[in-house]
Length: 87
Image (cartoon, rainbow, N blue to C red):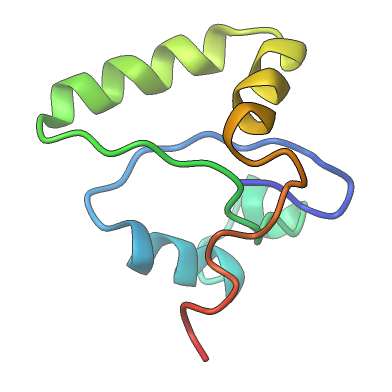
C-alpha cells in the first residue's frame, strides 16, 4: 500500500478487503494512519499463511528500488486497485 508521496507499506492479512477498508478509514493506529497509507497498489494471494508471512518478510527486506520495480511490473501507473471497492 502507499500514499500520494509513494511511501510504501507491506503487510499481511487473512482478509484483504477488510484490511484495506481499515487503512482507508484510519481505523488502525500506527504507521498507515500517520502517513495516510490508503492506496492498494499491489497484492499477492497465498493459500498458506506461513507462505504469506515468509513473502512479507522477504519484501520488507528489499531495498525501496526493488519494491518499486515489483509494483511497476504489474501496476506501472500506481493505480489504487481498491478504488471502487467501497462505493
